[in-house]
Image 1: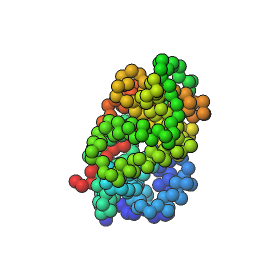
Image 2: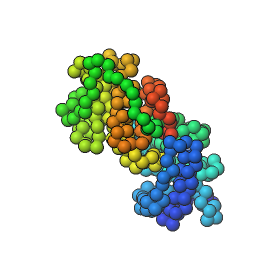
Image 3: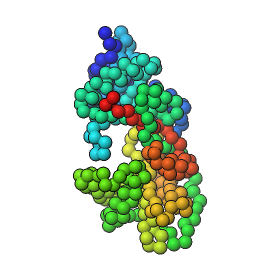
Image 4: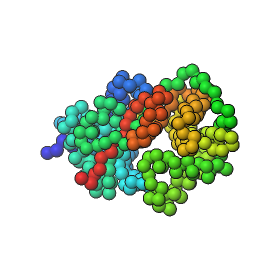
Length: 307
């Protein structure tokens, strides 16, 4: 008889303890990972989750758990996501047993792939050995003193708004290309969804759309907002995203100066950490964020469920 079964509400306390222990271990390896964890809130969320949790139960002793939420992705179809709190195990055979059962359920629900966040470094090895590959990175930076820099002549940074939608759409297309997305492959629904997201972003008072102009012409952008509570991330973290530089202004240090400017604003606003994400195939992003001091905390890995 298999030791794997569906989790029940009474398992929530034991699973929460396992997650707390795992986050604590992650934080001891990487200080940019936060071990802060509300077990009560997690237990409540787990107990009322609509998606099944799989546990390995060895005569009443929980030896691991695996949870995944399945959603429809506009670009990649139906996929299942697992966060840093969505799994635990001490032995590889436990992970194998959990995956065997979970894969069946996810395939039956129409999921084409499983994506999981794992601690950067040694935390990825077990997943890679099971056919997963790294697709993106979460990087963090501890903030301290403000950065000393000077804007070149003719350069000006301002906060964009709804009137800058066309500029934001043009930069969004550049980001898609950098991530390997062919623009002619996007459907009308995907284009409309992207535009709606940008309209919401430009109108959100918590989001800052930083736009650099050179002699009055848009040359670069960056979006920042307070990072919502996220497992493994510290409180008071500002998120930096959608960084892009117009091709003719690249390789002049503009991205670095812009990031220093937005980080200075964040420091003045009381943020203590900054976080970014980048696709592993985007070599320029990997080089830039690393050069700016951002260190990988978690990586997202993907495995097809069709094989």
